[in-house]
Image 1 (cartoon, helix red, strand yellow):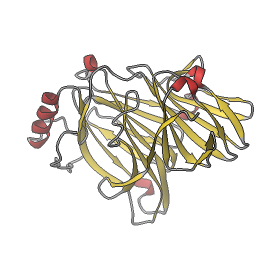
Image 2: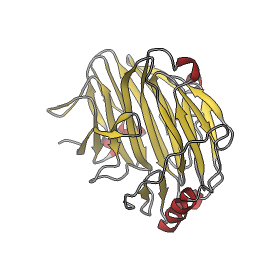
Image 3: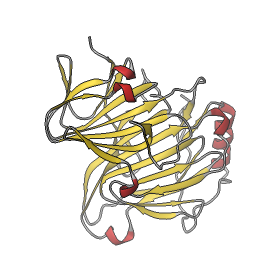
Image 4: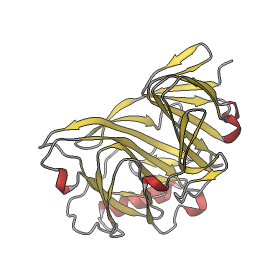
Length: 293
């Protein structure tokens, strides 16, 4: 019997001057554990006159996780952080009651051809922490727990699993795991997982029962503890999930909260430009019109 309850296909979305593949939220599945948003960026070949430029924009009620496979992004925020993220490292920005940041191609790459490929993820905060002070953490690639078992490579990018803990400072029980294999292998990790769980296929394929699943799909399990599949040779997948929150979280644009009034306040504050500023930045992304979902 299959342990897959839902298959989500990657959908194209525009984030300004850059196209991404949107995976979450999905009309039939708004969140997986505390994970409420996942964008697959690229792989994009950018020429010497093309650059990623996402001007200052606000967030509340969530933590963002940026994880690159290729390329580089310069992160600037209203805390005064100015830091370049490279492949394998993690940028973890907790918005809490409000933060503003920009994401751009670093200056030294703006006149050259380059690649950009990675994941942008939002993790909702527990209700009692939605109004916490914002903060930012950068974790280098070498500090991410990594190990090999039966010729399969694992990384615990965030959270806790396999008796290990990532240095990324999460605020609820969760896990974000990378699994890479050069050989076809059977993977059985359900005993290490909990709560809700999703599997994203970046490259290669997996087999579950008689079905084969290809890249750019998220598979949502019916029971995380039964997570078992066959990974094909030269494949990379990501397992993410954790304990869901008891209350519903609403999303409007870059704002996430269990309280719609906090979202309305954030909308007003951004329209009136009373959010904190990003030093050295004068542009900003205007508030869009869509309804709270």
